[in-house]
Image 1 (cartoon, one colour):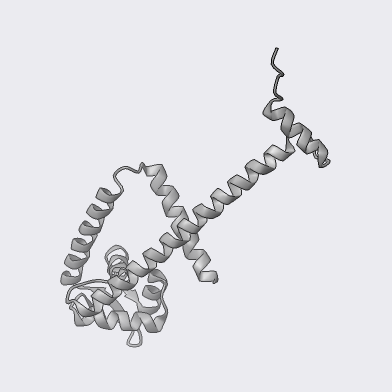
Image 2: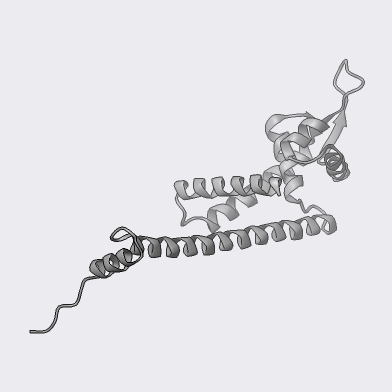
Length: 181
């Protein structure tokens, strides 16, 4: 009769006992290392994808400065804030677009030059200025939002809402990490 080979569990048990480990602990550590390596590789892929997203945003900003009517993500975000929340002060718009006051002033200058926004003084307050979306700005926002919605829907059609929610959480976490770097 052929000699029976020890099972994987028995071999792991023997190996673990040789190193003073509990039975099965060696296999668990090997699995943990494989998981750790797989996680490290997945995190590396995520970091590289985030770099690609950042590079795409830079290319979009470049097109926005060279191409009439093109909008950077920050321009589009400002139009969206104004469309959804109404007139905003520079500081309110800066907070909503996650930019500095100085950057928002430059942003508003560009949007005003394109005819998308105006600066208006509120009645009874000669010191404040509100940024107000024009009809042209509203139309440009609506067009840009429709194109973005269609592109997202088409590109991400195979992902269910739960997967999209996870992606949203990951992107927000990445933004928080980048703010800390």
